[in-house]
Length: 304
Ligand code: KMH
Ligand code: ZN
Image 1 (tube, rainbow, N blue to C red):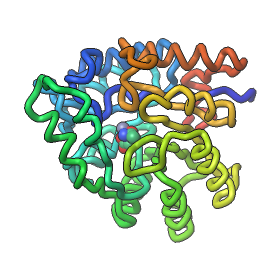
Image 2 (image 1 turned 90 degrees about the vertical axis):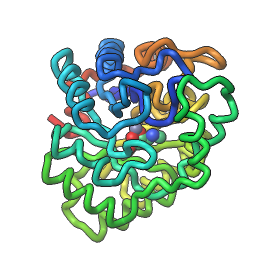
Image 3 (image 1 turned 180 degrees about the horizontal axis):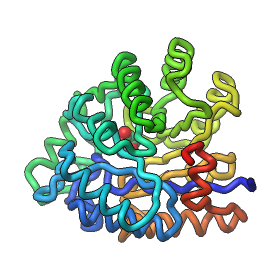
Image 4 (image 1 turned 120 degrees about the horizontal axis):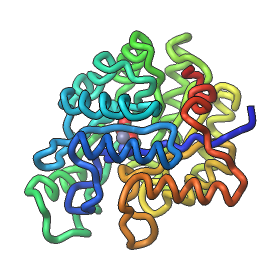
């Protein structure tokens, strides 16, 4: 099969808050509608978090996830990747509960604990729509996003038992060593080729520089061997499109979406996730890179 690029779209996440963009999807209906539009624009995979429809606060409520998942499944055949990263303050048990409940084809699995720093965003805004937003961001100066070795192994077993493939989120080069160690100690726990997501640009993890992406990829090649994994990359913030284009040129895949970046270009808000998908599809077409359909993506990722 000719190599094609899997584009995924991370629809809303748990980093940005309602004040930052009127286009950030909040209700289950908005999240599902934006996800379906992203798929129509070329995304094969959608990465899903839920929010409280009353105030946009990240939520672990399974009934919200249910509405989103049912609506997406009704409207298209996207690969659904549910987040087990959840949002600040949720327990690992709450975060992983989406896996046995919905048995998604893919779910994120964060490969290490980091001081997930969202606090610089708080300085950029003055008038907040909701009282929770500013303290939510400022608290992350002292927030450790917990993903211990035992958490990771527990979640991996839950995913294995439910037929869910983990999308392994690597926020720094050390997380590749965590992954390598876990694979060495738990033969058969991960089905190969595994699926890695290089996450660049989160404060507390590696920065969104092209050199860092190249280093992450060469480290994964050295530790695992290039035939044991497929991969994708995220550039959080304004490096979103340069990191995505570079990943595709390096024979990887890429993730756009309002979870990672609210803009479509410098100082211009993206009006939807689909706008960002269309932009990366257009950039990749300039390099004659073709976009994978949902069924081609399933085949490439071993999901079929
Ligand atoms: N928040 C992103 C930087 C997850 O949801 O588990 C990575 C992510 C992880 O999407
Ligand atoms: Zn996420």
